[in-house]
Length: 176
Picture 1 (cartoon, rainbow, N blue to C red):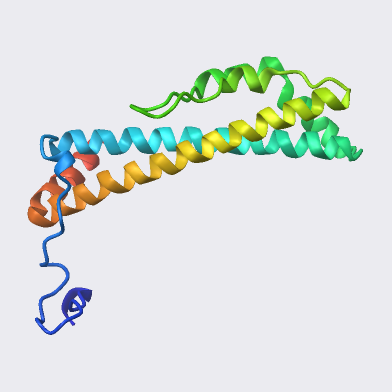
Picture 2 (tube, rainbow, N blue to C red; picture 1 turned 135 degrees about the vertical axis):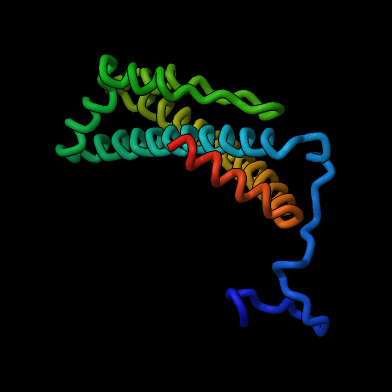
């Protein structure tokens, strides 16, 4: 088969490259450039959310490991909780909900919370961290769905007019 295009299933013989993709009416009034900007913004936000999820999960692991008396984790716990170094990272990674997403937990405040030695404090912090991780996971899932929708719309438009995709590549090469 020429250029790696496989025929669509069915008996028409039409290739999948020539079949039009359905367009999403939600994006009818949105330009291709706006879709690209939207996609970039969603990707950036997803990166921040994923980073915060990893931090929250690491803090949960550290707290749980410290409770079992694992010594190597004590140093990691001090590093992760170091207010001076984490403040710069936290400030650079603010996560704010996009559009109609419910408000996210105050991640910076949650991150700076000091762990007291009593079990009640530890359990409360673990509970709050787990709740934040669940909210971030739900938000991340929503971001992925939005990203998939914007990407599908761009692909549909590029398939309708392949020149638009080539212009996007030229623009990116010009930025480099």
